[in-house]
Image 1 (spheres, rainbow over the protein chains, first blue to last red):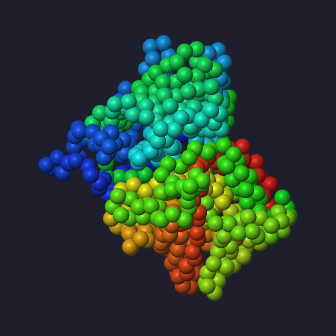
Image 2 (image 1 turned 120 degrees about the vertical axis):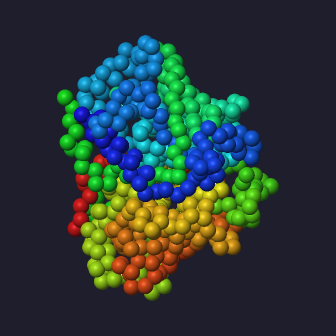
Image 3 (image 1 turned 135 degrees about the vertical axis):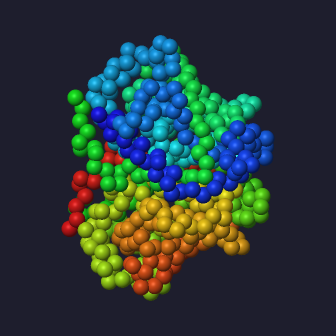
Length: 265
Length: 269
């Protein structure tokens, strides 16, 4: 019920972006006919590392769920463990929490409360995101709620006792052409997908981010969270470049009228 | 709460948040010039990007002054956070309806300040927000990452024109270009009814805001803001805000809606 509501909102937001922000993306390789050449080689920064900068949309191929309006959802949106043969290795506590969230129609989802969704769910969200890569820092600007995430790439270590937060504290370093990002310091009550698979304060997330060609981004996610899962697990997702457009301002709280109507079972 | 105005209450929260930040994120900022004793040298020359332009990147705190805030007592408050009037020669030239609206908003204890609803603030009000912001300058784009609600603002510096009919938004659509050492940013496409200061000076969808950003030395950012909004003001007006560099720290995650319990207690007069 709540998920349906959310999907409707998200689906409406996406086509709008294409309608009115259409300034040509700078530096985009193009074919003779002017169309973007998305299979061109990976762009690189001056230090020779892949440049992850761009405006990215989650791929929907292989997704099983559909939104209320029939739009196909990215594969990991609903269930981040969908591609694992045996599903996510929930601990008893983790499974109970997931089941209670499902039974409650996801009414306490952060999406329903206009709270940040967390770094895992945001990778497969229908709303696009823009990556900015500058020396020492990678920033992800999420259209979802117009919020940003910082990934420090200046060599700093992870903090010893970070303040628990929605996005955690992220430090990344290059392993060849892959940016390996480690994040800790999560809140205890997070949602890794729209079903409500948990992520807790004992969680450590490793993201291996690759841009194999101009138009594709691949992200391998490993979650090690002994409170919610009995073993670490790894899933993959991909995103594609959206060209000649940009982020819209998305403010969840503005004119928000849904929350009082969202009920559990 | 009945004797405290909302803006006072907000300021208290902000002051508390500032102290928390200093306590725990203390990784040294790379590239900061330091004096012989290891302290940041904030009067060092303006840093520059490879193309020779000033580099506005850094974490910035609005300059404060101590104001007697009634029940709060003397309180360090960012200049113009509460009232832009003292910064504008002759005061703000309100159109009659706009002056009335500002009076009504203030008389109601500023209870409908966008922060009480966890909404984005106008770009003018954001410059004096007590929470810090981080500027990132990369080719073609300047981003401002605000601690408040972890929200970002984009300023396109790739030479694009302003759009003809932008979708109205809180932050508008911003393009900037260099005029010598000043980054001149023009923004249009605002929603109606925004707040430019804590007492409720309004702006409308007719507003055009011009900001001249200058980093006068390593540790100081000056922003001259000109508001041209013929619906709300009889003539354009300007105000200058300053911000100082916060070394060896970083933004915290500030989520206004998280466990928000204040709104229902906020009342007007």
